[in-house]
Length: 398
Image 1 (tube, helix red, strand yellow):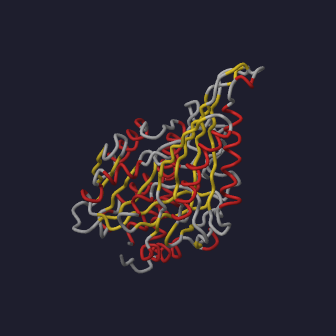
Image 2: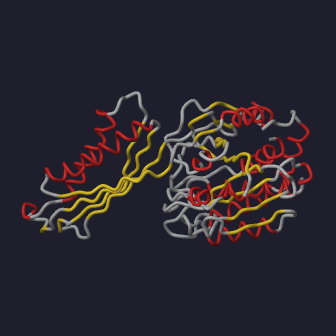
Image 3: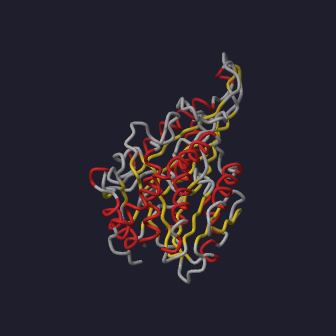
């Protein structure tokens, strides 16, 4: 991959073109935000994406590759070269929105709290910009609108279905709006960008009894509390402090009535680790500890530890190219370009692409105080057209 020489006129042209269609990009984003859909359920979203792509000259639309809600657009298939793939994730989260936005989610308990609506709208903007400049492309461009990033591994479905066998791809690029990065700044790094991301499901089986007679039963809620605290000791007292890792439980379910000791409790959580050896250690300790803790309290427990996402690895050469182009595109007053000092403990299924072909995943800063997966989260809409122009510049320059 050898980038084109610096072309300030092209950057200005792309920025101007993106501004001209900013209203449409924002309208797409608001529509996606208002009608969010969970992993592998993105039927309305994918139909809207396909309709928008179909209205752009020169783009062939493919639906259902690897998963029913996948949408792919291909521009300049006639060029005999390996393609550049630009990817956006399209699914939402099971969160009740509290943003108060006039275009807030219409669906109870479902929200775009991770910015995937903005990723999708920005990539549609990129597709529109490039469809108007198809003659300038040196390589085919694949616009990949991927379902089920949020824990369900939509990327793996697409890779396993033979995406890279069917479409010769030189590299895959992806962006994510990121609140912990200064507004308008682009950040990335070579090598590991995200953590190994695993899922944990623990079932504690006790004995039901009246709440006034807990001695006649075995309380799984109390045992779940012991398990929750004991697992944190793995991080604080058993793992090498120099090794980054976190274990969090976001869902615990137990009981149906306030005055009944339930018969079982369920805990769902995640482990995020940067070192594969630490990953092995944490999994082994969890699988070893949990049954013993339950047994000490006269109960039984089972553990389902699922290795979910691998670590996302940015290709060194492609990332050098992205940094070089970014220094041309992102001027310092607007935020500029910076290196991500450490890998994120977030999980990201873009990792499955990075295991197959050279890839680069980038963060574009929103500078907000609220983090991802927050019920008030919002993406500043003035960034959408900038992201559209940036991805168009990458496609034309790499």
